Image (cartoon, rainbow, N blue to C red; front, side):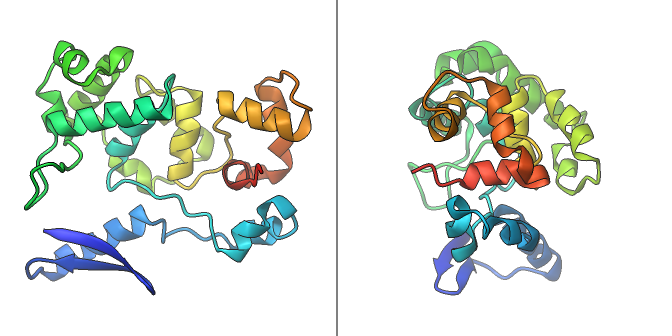
Length: 241
């Protein structure tokens, strides 16, 4: 049993039993990944402090995006954000976890995110009927089956030294991952050269710079092009108020 709790100086990992050095190293790596402690933002902060809409980022040392323990989990959650409302995403995620996840130790109503093997053992119709994932069902099932079979190694992308464009191609090769999802996943991997452009982005950028007139993705790109390799993060943290 492992729990991560917030403390005044950061986070604390509590364990129910003794662990060896290898297990400790594995936990440290997982915590560093989930909280983005492996990332350096000093260059971004130097740029952000010159922009009033990003001053809060520097003042509060923001920039780290919370990540799931596995990239498999984040890919699925990202797919579940597409073409739906936030409430729909939560509903589908909760249904998937409840149906296929293992109960947490000492819990009866809380579950861990399901493993690829647990989902892979199901079938498309069951996914559609029990979790109401809709058109996403075959994508989720295919992803789980490929990982369970060992034909796809998503975790290797965490430490990949591929250029961003090539890494994006790898993500786009996953069924169910389009431009929006790929941009979101790239940010989780520490690459901010692409924007997560959806209807909300069009609305906010239109209000900020185009007097609420109808715009397209090109205008969103133009709004943040000066941020270069940091434009995805600048957009993500922008003060839209």
